[in-house]
Image (cartoon, rainbow, N blue to C red; front, side, top):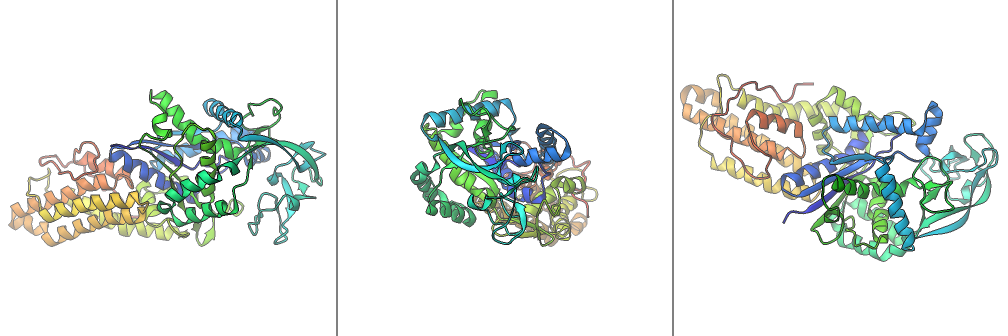
Length: 528
């Protein structure tokens, strides 16, 4: 029975270009979406741009623009980037759409009506000159841990997150005044009430997660879940659907994380489908969340808490696909240092499939990894071009070959192809993408070895039947690579299917059709 699968890619924050670390954290979502579609599952792969919050308003002030202009600029850039890297989102939206605002307000109201959102009075930093409550990142303090001058949300130098007590006497970053404490009214989400249910969901699924997701989630559960503020004193964001909160907006973490749900609802409405098939328990569901390790708790704990609070039997997130960090030239990527190579820059210079291959086979799947242009160029030239590109080129562009020859299937070749399908499927479903792409590359190497051993350049002159068999079997390997590489290198697979007049993608062994004309065959890759 086919599964109903939701795959969520983390929502990038629309105040900065997507660097290669974002690509490394998000590529797994597209691998999973393409794989599950080709095996016949019903897939909704969703994401969007996170367009609200203080960093965007800060950037807008600095550039003399509106927050909407900043968010829209980066949203459009994200769409361009994801299209060029061939991410196959079913929905890529943004948190500023009317649909998202309306649906998150409905969900917020439901959580409030169910008794999981409550009012709380608490002291908060206030600037008397600006006449407003300040968010942590709007306050400048001296870090109590290392002494550096920093924004109060997190120390830029040592990473320390200051406590409320440590914010006292901070300076308003906008006007330079010393802040005071003043009592403020906010709404809180009672996350602590779902400790046992979230613990049960984690225990049931964590063995399928990567170690970083297991450890980070258990850290929060072992400490005991804390209730979280869901309102902020902002003028840019989703309105609170309750009287008395007209001057506040929904905290960005709650409305952005609900974007996965609003995306699925919107897609289903627009395509005459029932969203319950994907979101409500009991419909053979599966839910993957794909992101970097700094986003783990938002998906393993907070999103599940919100879904539980709706009391409508929502299917909880069961699979966390969390990467480690990507460094560039041995340095941590930092906006302040400006050392992050943007994905768009790379895509404007290099082949998208090569970039995808490199970040799947050399990315931070289980440990922090380092990216250099020299390493990337080696991957492209030595692995992709010399092995995969070479097998396709020398088989389909063999001098004097005009069509796919009629040959006899070699049993060993057939068995190797069958074995590869089984092993790659198992590895993808175990979230072992690096090993999965290696297995496909092993089939490429098998094909090149087979070609070299058979020596078709000699067979062409001395044994035409043997030559036809060799080229036919190598063509069969290439035809199957167009399926096996589909989750990883989709643009090359389209080219192969076009060259060999292949039908729909399948996750099963196929045979090339003898007689297909081999004209206009161009190399899949060129040397860097």
